Image (cartoon, rainbow, N blue to C red; front, side, top):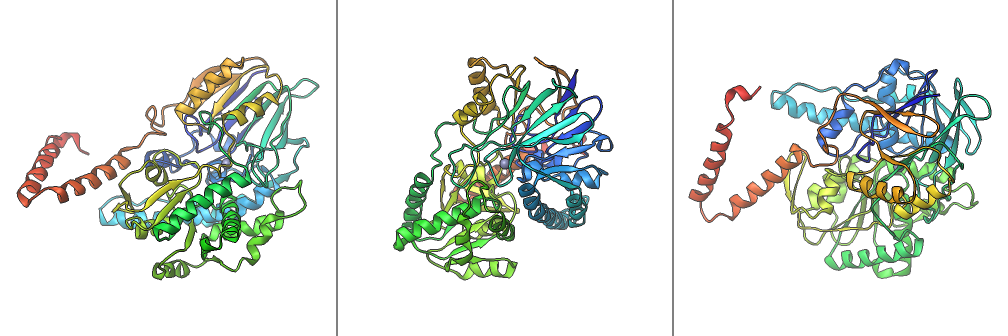
Length: 531
Ligand SMILES: [Zn+2]
C-alpha cells in the first residue's frame, strides 16, 4: 500500500501546520493552520490553497492554536463541507479563537484598505470573516482521547494527550482494514511533561512513521517547573518595579495568559512589595479563561487552579476598547497583559507604540517568537522598530523568559519518541526553523532513526518501512524565505536607521548630501524595471 503525504505548511518554519494525506481512497487534512511571521509568509494566507479543497473528505485537528486551526474558516469558505474531528477542549477553544481571528482579519483589512486607498493601491479581501466561523463550528465532530474513531473509509484515528494545551493531541492514523494497517503518528505540538497543570504526553508504540514537531530541536533544559519559573518571574518583576514600571507582557491568550496571571498573583502574594494592578487587555484571553474555568486544565486532576482567576481583587479584565484606552492615563507600577503573543496583531501593538520609547518601561516576552515577527525583532534587541507605519525608538528594557513554553525541549522530544518504541519507517520532521531542524535531524540519525526534513509542498510516498520523496509543488516561497526577515522587515530597519543618521549629522548640508546620494541610488533603477 502506498500513501502520499504532502506538507502544505509548517515545513522549514513553525507556523501554518497543514498536511494532506491521500490514501488512494480518501483525502484528509491534518490541521489547517495560519502562517505567522514576515509579511511575505503571511501573504500565503491570502492565496488559494495549493490543493483541491473539493476533494478533501475530512480534517483531523491536533489542537486549537491558530497556527494549527486558523485557516479552517478559509477552508469552509472555499467549499469544504466534511467533518472536522477534534477533542472537546479543542473545539471549545476554537469557538473563541476563530471568532477572534475573524475579527482581527476584518479590522486589519479595514485598516489596510484605508491605507491602500490613500496610496492608490488595490483593495484586498479578508481571508475570512465572522460569518464564516459559525458554519465552520457546525462541522466539528468531537472525539474522545485514547479510543479509535472511524474518520473516513478505511481510516481509523486515535487522539492521544500531547500535554501542550487543553485538548491538545497527537493523532495516530491507521490506514487499511485488517490486523496490519499502515500506522502514522502525527505528533502535533508536544509538551514537556514537566509543565504544571498539563498531563504527560502519551501515544501508541510501534508505528510505521512519525511526523514530529521540532520547535525546540536545538534547545536544551528549559526550566518549566512551577517553582523555577515563578522564581524567574519574581526576578523580572523586581527589576521592572525598580525601573519604575509599567510592565508590558505580550501574551498568548490561550493558556499562557492564564498561567502567567496565576504566577503573577503567587509572586505578588509572596512579595507584597511587588503587588500591582494586573490588566488583562485581551477579550480572547478573557473568553478563554471561561473555557478553562469550565473544563479545568488537566482532566486527570480534580481541582481547577484557575478558580483563583475569578476572585483576584487586583486582576482587571478589559473587554471594551475604551477600557483599554483608559490605561493611557495610568502611571507608575502596573502590569498589562495583551495579545498577540508575537506582537504581530492585537491590542499589544497600541501599547507598544505608546510605551516602547520610555526607559522606565519593561517589556517581558514569554514564548516562542517566530522569525520576522515584531516580538522576535524586539527580543533580538532592535533599537528601533516600525509599528503600523510609525518608527518607534526602543527605550524600554526588553527581557525574555523561556520558562513558559508549551513545547518540550530537544531531550523531551527524544524521550517522547523513544517511548513510542520501534519506528519501522521514517521520522519526518516539521514545525521547526532550519537550524532547529538540522540539529535535531542529526541527533535522531545518531540515535538510529531515519530522520527526514520535510519541504514546503513536498509530497512523500509512505510505505511500511520507508518514505520516499515523489514530487514538489511550484515554489510558493524563495528558499529560506519562511524564516528570514523579508523586504518589509528590511525597509523598516532601513527607514529607522536613516532617520537616526539624519538626526546625528551635524548640519542640514550633510543631511541633504545624504538624501541626494540615496536619490541617485533610486534613479539607478531604470523606468522599464518598474511596473
Ligand atoms: Zn501549539
